[in-house]
Length: 406
Image (cartoon, rainbow, N blue to C red; front, side, top):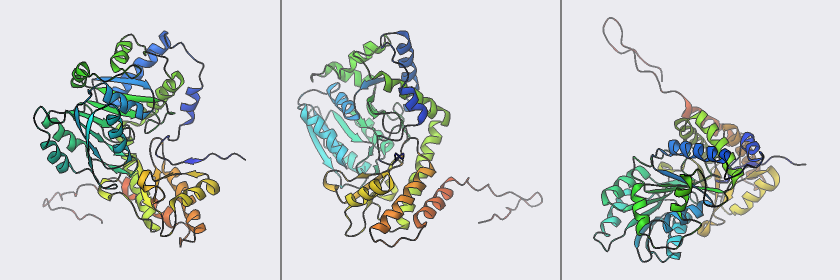
């Protein structure tokens, strides 16, 4: 008998029923007025969410397609770039650059650790002069390890250097504060299937005026991913080639839902649920993989119990409890598991996850009391969402501060 899964991977994320229904609407002409209105509305909404007055271009592609577009539209063969990597997707950004003949120097940070702004400053200092790196590439939210890099601080350092700044925010934007214009981000990439809560298939790419100047100098081959073609078509309210029309319609519906909640509330909800998730895991002695101070608001990574292969834990969750989480990638395969709390996720979703996890842990002969993780998750969420205490009141007679309850 079919039972809906609790999809707790860090993308594709749960798609609300109204968004699914929107994707099933009758097909429309992608060169007609209905699509023109749809595309214009999507562009405006995404500009608002990403805090940019610059161009926002939608490609029928995965997030990786967006990363490739960022590189081929701003760089040339032999250009030197600096790629900071603290996980599998930092490595992927580097691999894409190398594939196009870009002279990409990778600065590796231990997986699970944050990208320190001081390291960025020191490495950029080595790239001065006309023979230095032309661009800096980083991953905002490293999905493979559950680390959120301090993009605002790093942006300030890159901005001071005058170098082009390309950012992979595939699993960050839409759930984490992202100020494209204020932070001086030249190209930012995200994807429909992550925090935006739509089906996979649309890459979202921003381009600053500096990025367009870099485009004019770029000599890397491009056709399908040519962003100038996308921009020219957008001015006619079209796309250069046939888009994933149904996904565009679904994205329109998900953005409406997000607008009703508001981006500030969305970001706070993700922080609160991430905090509750970490406390629930710790309550049953599961070790967090990422540094707590820089833990991602959208995905939490944790080590499996001693002598337990995380792939077995993931299998039991899936086969016995219809709960789907992700495993480690690359060198972390079999060592960690990753639980997503990204997009249209609620406290109830995470309580259901912990219910399944407790049962799975017991099947793996781990000592877990019933409700142990669930109660810790609920307490932490309550702590995170409590309103701040009111300021002490002064007495009318003396101005002395009235005592407050602790």
